[in-house]
Length: 381
Image (cartoon, rainbow, N blue to C red; front, side):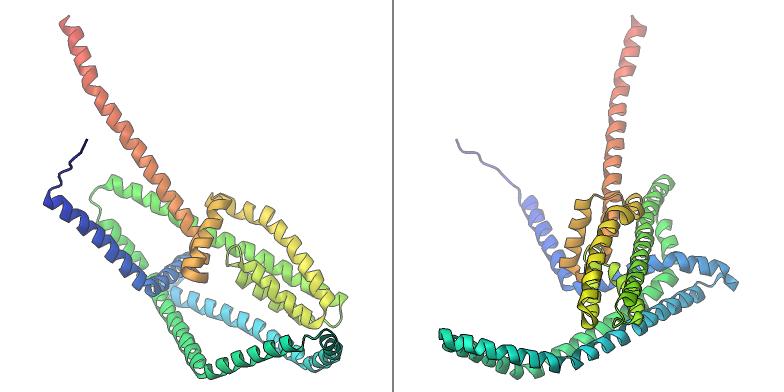
């Protein structure tokens, strides 16, 4: 049995126009991904700074939002400068200290090499060693030949990063200043006041999720940074060759990297453990043990108590959103992934609720004629 399906030309053309349109839109989004990331980061920073800027503007003479934004920017720049000042010099100092120990490590390696040399001669492994060394030399020559190209690529990356950072700062500044005006213009588009109030409530819920996440993450990071700094400060008393000045860089590194969900705290812990290992290996082991224990406490008690009520997301949703954010948009995507997932959850819940209300209203409307007919029939009888 053959089934013949007739499709008119207009439907066929519309279908392929829609497919081509979606393809072109996806291509445009992919081509503009860098610009979209910059805009997304700027929007994230603008939303994060909106609360302090709004509070400052209400207290300034004339309620100047420009002045409040400038003060908030100055505070952020001072904070970043303090973090750089606290982190960079100790890292450079510890690296230089480690470099001073390299000669002794080389002497130790040379001593061990004599023993390894006799082992190679005893078991006839010299051809394999020569082949491995020749391969290393060839790779080193290839790398050396591409040094100039690598330097140019690195300079271009630094320049692009610097340019992107300036764009983010300028866009964030403009968003903070013009944000209220653009918001008023957007709500003025609505002609239905009931729908506008409903959408305002949804937008308020989404903004509450975002600000709640930012506040909660800053609180969790501050607690972790304080605990890490105290841990290193106590370790410096146990091991005299560990400088107490490492406590402040430890707190700064932990605070900044803990803002990256899921993986940032682990990266910070590894960096601090390596810095301590440059001075004293047992001290690094003790800190590593502390870090593992504290992460269990933070993940099971501190973070859930602070963040659970603000986001209402399952562990699978959090991990999935962070994974997608990191692999699609990098570190910036990982930072904004969780509040974005919270916003998407609210949109899905609102969509489902609207659909239910619409179906309920349609069902009630469908029952009304039946009731009228029944009432008319009874009156006639």
